[in-house]
Length: 357
Ligand code: DAH
Image 1 (tube, rainbow, N blue to C red):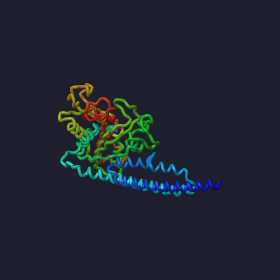
Image 2 (tube, helix red, strand yellow):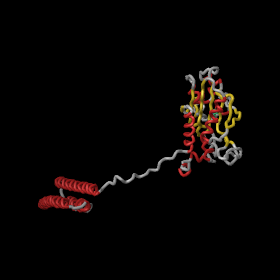
Image 3 (cartoon, rainbow, N blue to C red):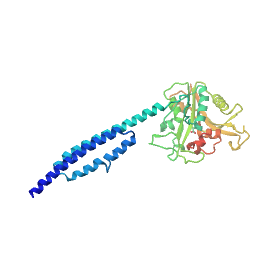
Image 4 (tube, rainbow, N blue to C red):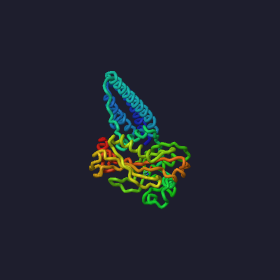
């Protein structure tokens, strides 16, 4: 029994020596092979040969199973050192080849600075904005300046100060999106008039484009979100003649010199008198066609002389100042201008449709 143990220890001692020699041998052999490797691929093959699942180092480590518990850490430590040294040598050599190949590529590459750049597709102005920008340009040339207001608005500014009666149907929950009893999504751009007039001394000459919201089902001519353009002039001595002259002049610029306009009586609570303005159809010149539905005219906007109550509610003396206002739907204008029959086309992002204009 005793003899047997000694024999085993000796055998095991012998085994440690063998493994240590083998590990040193592998280290020497592998480092020299890595040093001689000529390509990235050579290095990878060497990695597999020494460190792979069936690699030389791995096989030796498997032989450690026979060692005693005291011997294992000694050989294990050496084996780890050998593995780390090989891993370092391999990754250094790989990095060397990578850098070499980048440098080679760079030295071969020449850049032709005379080549023209790649053309990126440029965006296209939306038909709504084409119409809006054209209108802004004309009105701005007449001295109007653009003023914007919030889309989330006080009920007071959207209805009360605009002289809209408390029982008017446009105030209903079924027509308007309310946040609270006092706050809503504006149903028109007219509250910007109120904001422009409050605490200011005329003259005022403003233009206000923006989104408005109504509780409507979506169809070919309705959308819960649409755009309006609002205009307002307040000064001493402004009359209905100024309103007609200005709007007629703009229609002629937008639709052509031969365009005629007509004013039909209408009712808005914030203007008195109020009117709707039609322009002779630009497509058929008033003869009647598909675009004007045979009438020869297209309905363009609502307008009127600012109601004295509105001026008073904004702190402006109606005995000293008068003014006119107008408002129009931009979707409608774009649909007329471009002969678009369905409003939904303006909200779909179909670039094939949109790039036609
Ligand atoms: N706010 C009106 C609407 O949404 C449009 C309008 C009509 C605006 C007459 C005005 C105006 O400023 O004078 O139907």
